[in-house]
Image 1 (cartoon, rainbow, N blue to C red):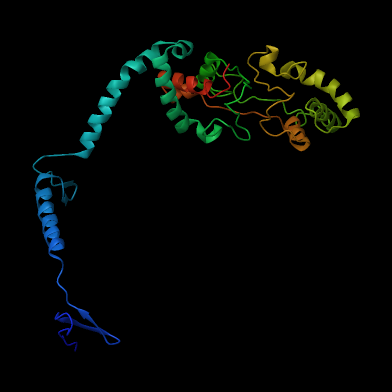
Image 2 (image 1 turned 180 degrees about the vertical axis):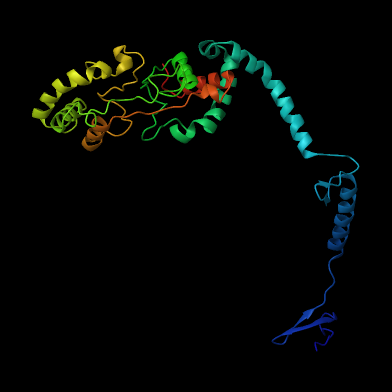
Length: 296
């Protein structure tokens, strides 16, 4: 059994605990600590009375004050929505170009557009609009469906090759699969890809590239343009064919990827956001995307 001793130097009694000849002094707690502890207990009792505190099955004690953080949050959200209402109403009533010219509306639309973009678009296009394989960059000046504010608004609203009646392009129909559909044979695909590589200053077989130009003119120029400048630059509306000369490649510009593209085709689809977002939100998104750096 542990025995208590009185320490000879301090005169304080020990607790009876001993480790290798070392005894623990039973020093009392500091008075300031005890008083603070008592104050905390008193405060807790007061809190229990005035504020929500104890759970009671599916409810809880409401407290004398009846305070609720949820109600406070709802009130603040209602105040915020009321403050935004005039801007949202104005944005809904104006065109995207008109919003761009209004300094106050532009600032509001940019702030909202950034939030909407991160919530709905960043998963595919990247947080800064930098894009990814199969998802176009939104911060450059290459726009397959037009880079004006109105064009971007229409693209977001109706999507690309989506099931929306006014979608850009034909629903679920993209680039022709020239190899899979038997339109071009392997040699022709090999030749036309060398021609495209030569347009971009990449290593290519000169003989194949020369033959590939004829293949290109007959099968590809109608969409991508005679000079491979892309459908928008060529004035071909509703196609979305990218430029193939000095282009920002969506799937890759190496020989193998180009052969795969020509053989199997590509058919990227973007949803029609008008079915998920209201018009003011879509306009804010269009303004934000247009101002990422590459809008025209």
